[in-house]
Length: 72
Image (cartoon, rainbow, N blue to C red; front, side, top):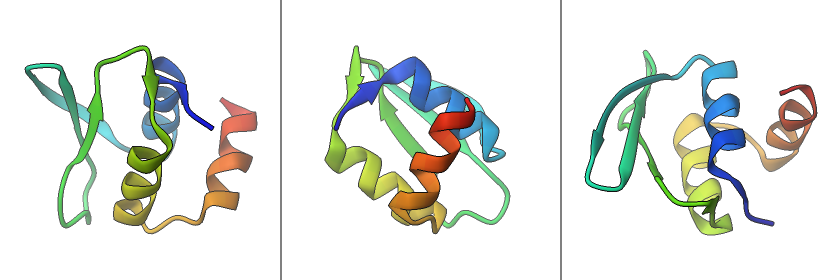
């Protein structure tokens, strides 16, 4: 299920990511220990495939993501 970009940004900040810059319509987040930055489209909603790719980059399982979403 797609989620609103603002909610996904809150999730990223909760797991320790920091906003670094914006390039075009993409928001770039980074965290110590990541091999590549987290890229989020600056749109109304974040599609499921982008959420899954970013979870893989963060080394998180979808269940962890859903639990954290309840907290933010």
